[in-house]
Amino acid sequence: MKASSLLLVAAAALTAGAVSAAPVKYNIDPNHTYPSFTADHMGGLSNWRGKINKSSGTVTFDKEAQTGTVDVTMEMAEIDFGHDKMNAHARSNEIFDVEKFPTATYTGKLVNFKNGAPTEVDGTLTLHGVTKPVKLKINSFLCKPNPMNKKETCGADAVGKINREDFGVSYGKAFGFKQDVELQIQVEAVKAD
Image (tube, rainbow, N blue to C red; front, side, top):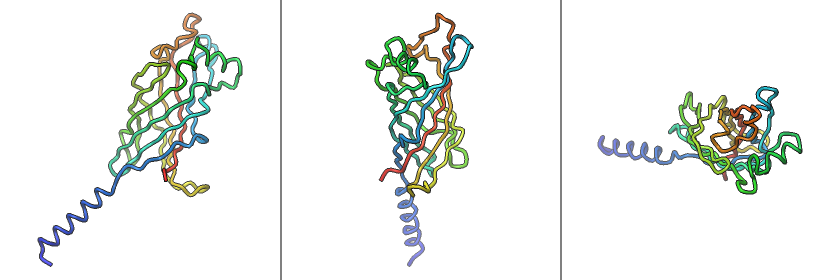
């Protein structure tokens, strides 16, 4: 085989390898995903912690290209402070108005990769009918086979901050409630079949 033919074959092989690399889709595991938050109560009197018990969505991840996306939907009627009266109040039209705004969504791109893993998500949060940019810092990100179900699973721990007043959720401000909310998101997603 001539050298020029060998080069063409090698180039074709490299191109085929590059084309075959593609983002992998992962479905969020609702049993191991907990968007949670910490919010002020009475202007520093205490901090209330809550979580959203039901969420769904997808993550795409391409380790070679160092790209990926996140798309999460949270069911706001599933907000849980561990306190029934607080849960009912949070769902009411005074706060999240879940009848009018039943879901919150977060979509974003995985960015700032280090050692093959993203360190941030650059995205937008839609909450209470308002969409604003929200950046999340990823404290840990790992993909590996789950020893229980033998499926490749990616997991992450991410944090961020929002001002809830920016989303039209300012209940308690007149009583001195601080409007800053810390977000803590624990997520696991299983490779789609």
